[in-house]
Image 1 (tube, one colour):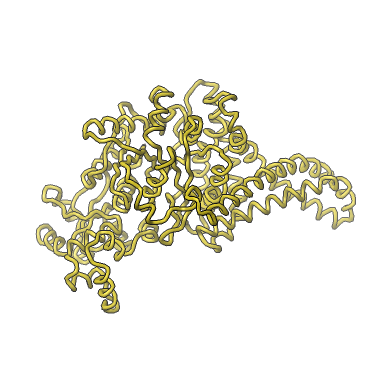
Image 2 (image 1 turned 90 degrees about the vertical axis):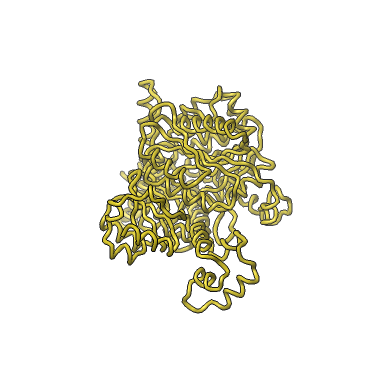
Length: 596
């Protein structure tokens, strides 16, 4: 009967769930110990640094590597937002592109005109190859840059085109770089509405991984895998890797070069540091980004992760090399089995419950009980473990996104099982096909989206804090101005009226606050036909004027920050991506008089 084979099939699967639950419980206890150490220890090794300690650390010269392939739609936003928001001045962005990706190359060149600390690296061959290959050529460009400008970078950070770097991220990395050669800052998904289930899976899993798994690895002596973004490497460790691996800082054949480099650093015996999630200024200090929001894109991205970590990583190390970290390699690779079993477990437990209900209704429950009773302890322990891990994921998710969003975790766990199973099957197929044909694994790239204005606004500083950083207004005069501001009047306008700020100073501060360039277009940059792409009445009403098209983008200058209504109005007349830059009201009037 169905109940007999269901009971027998559930037994080995439930045993796997039990073994997995014991493993997760071990990590739970370690993560809890790590939390107690941070909470109650006075040892600087465990607790978070104070603002004074962050400020006292000598600033290192840092290079940020950003490898690109067909990222022209988002790279200008990534550069503008991060360059203007970072509370760290000693940084240079090196952006790697391929010669056959002209749109991305043009977008980066436009960014270089706006920001002096952005440099373009063009690989000597067409792409795409691999992310690691792109990063290696960026490294070579950095070496040439050092010789050209007689500087030396102390740290190298890796980031992607969709990353929203925390304004204080480099300060934290700089602090821990005093004692560590690899520093990983947390990576968290930006929240989207709950109906984006695939994206919600990333919110849940990354929150749990950063709160639980990474601190546990740090405490137990496991190697820290790089998350690919928000990772800082000391110059010493990069030169040691280059010497040992034929000048290949990142393994070109590896599609998860970030994971591989985490183990390389550990094998060199150099200290690694994962920075546990800290909440400062009403936000978690972490790299934020949007992850794929559809099932297909989520599967494509996870296919690369599964293929690189659970399958390809076997190719780069002998058993003797990995012996000291065997438990962590097993833990990372068990997903190859777990991902395939999880959906089957869901189905069989549903089927088992259904057959039990049927047997009970038809007075055959004794038959099911006699067959399955010997497996009840395994079932119970496995289900208890599953319930515990789901509860922990709910708590971790709630810490970042709130309890309302976290209530959807049980539903998203089922969605995650289906995504991971599909990605694992796809990874096995692609990996097997490549091995049989002797071909390299492809760079499985997903389309990226950069955080919109609303997401950036949630993390932006208040204008008064930006002005405090600039030290343009004394604190006592700022407090007096805040007290005297009439209701409904914007702070910036009030400060200008009081004579505490000039209009250009206000707009410079607004540009820093909102990650928008502040610059009046030069006459040679203005195209007369483009200025007429909007009706004059609308342009004057919005106080915004289109003035050029470059890199597939429409450049617009305006004296009002570009909210969604303004962008909707412009999109009625142009399908191009909008690239906005701020000008003062007086500068806009000059532009309008000359061109509108």
